[in-house]
Amino acid sequence: METIREKRTLLSVLAHPDDESFGMGGTLAKYAEDGTDVYLICATRGEAGEVDSEFLEGQSSIAQLREMELRCAVDKLGLREVQLLDYRDSGMSGSADNKNPEALINAPIDQVAREIAEYIRQIKPQVILTFDPIGGYRHPDHIFIHQAATKAFYLAGDPAFKSSYPLYKPGKLYYHIIPSHFVRFNVRLLRLLGKDPSKYGKNKDIDLTQIAGQDFPIHARINYSTVKYRKDAAAACHTSQGGKGLTRGFFKWISWLLGIKPEDQFMQAYPDIEQISVKKDLFS
Ligand SMILES: [Zn+2]
Image (cartoon, rainbow, N blue to C red; front, side):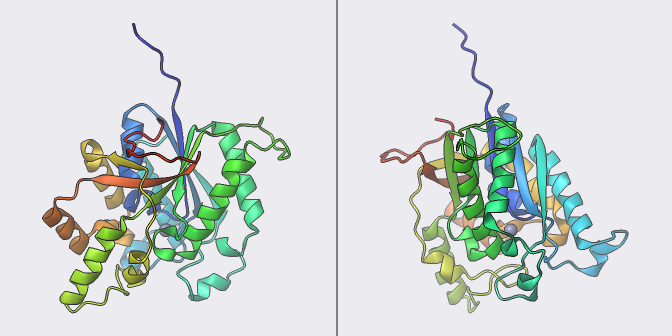
């Protein structure tokens, strides 16, 4: 007998154009391919990103260029819609962009949480995904969005929160995590090669030694090998940011060497679980 599956809806709440493609893009593409309505919230237009002047020809601003790259990626991943929250990229910790009054980190967190909660009530996702508590690599906007999205998850189901859409209680909240053993391995290897693991990435602003010290439990592993081409195509949209993400160059080579599968790992934040086996489906 054929059973009719409830319409699946998933929402990913992130901070910058490229977070979706360089981070959990494989998972987003996999669910989209499977018929799930996948939505994305992007809080900023990545105004503080490093962009070489050649990419800005014919563009009025970094924001415009990066929004265009984001819309290209959304299309490649097969997402249904991207909602921009109109805050400004706060830049890496300690940068001058931190002090811009328009910066995301200077916005009242309850205000951002209300905007996200309103969108949750509108699209009714069963599953919500966001950054882990350290924002992947401690980017201040990622940490802020982790906190705002977590607040919004509960706010959407709170009768005290009045909005233009009716109350809706999403079922599951997950945090995307970077496996610490993999990061630790890379830290050791970079040191062996005489490179500085505290200054990793295109902008040399990712401190792998700090990420390596964090261990979050893995409750779900999503293998996206069947749609990896979609993630790669989406990442390639972000040409001004190198187009390859954290798995570029060195990481990519190591992944290949270690035989690491195209897979995303998630920690389940809600509901509480004490499971033994690791899930293969975020909706189960
Ligand atoms: Zn980001």
